[in-house]
Amino acid sequence: MTMIVQSQVKNRLLRRFPEDAFELLARCLEPVDLPVKHSLVVARKPIEHVCFLESGLASMVAESADGKSVEIRHIGREGISGYPVVLGVDQTPDKTFMQVSGYGLQLATEEFAPILDHSEVLQLMLRYVHTCELQLAHSALAAAKFNMHQRLARWLLMCHDRIDGNDLALTHEFLALMLGVRRAGVTDELHILEGMHAIRSTRGNVRILDRDMLIEIAGGCYGVPEQEYERLIETPPPPVLPVHLNGNRHHHTL
Image 1 (cartoon, rainbow, N blue to C red):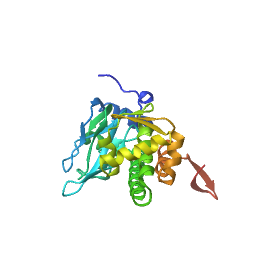
Image 2: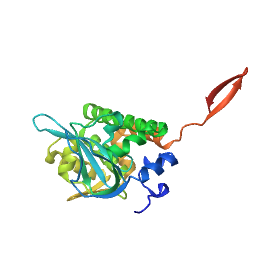
Image 3: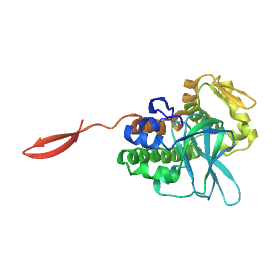
């Protein structure tokens, strides 16, 4: 069995694990290929595995009782599939599957649960869940207050954040799912972004030509959840140091 080394993993959450907790986790992690359409979480079924994505792009999709569906968030190397288990939830009405192929590091939920007893791991994972909820909130904000090409620019930026290179293997059908619109509407909006020289769209692929232009087009509907992720996940917490005042021991952070 190949030993998984923390300094070599690409998943941004795993890189933030305390060293001792990662060593325990590494014994259970199994490298897995994640082809397009591979199911990571099946709706209303027990979440049997969690998977730290190393590459590729997964979609978390909500579906109504009458079969209407929309993508509610992305998962890439910044995150983990099956994250509701962190909150003690054994299943969810939402489904998660791969939209862009990749690979990940997977382990059984029953093997992941004891790792959450490590206080620093639990704090890290709860901060990650907070960023997931914030992404959902800003998707609702974008849908209510921003126009279609701004929302499309936001989704493309979010995909670009999670995939290496500037070519996004995204079909018009997937983009329509992301935005909750008809495929013809997506085609029209892609033409708008192409006219601004921000992207080039071909069959099954969107190439990012000017990321700064996309950020400008997206305006205020992109950036807040991303900044919060950087603050809570990428920035290490301040050290806690003992301080003695009047003979009493206190703690403060730098």
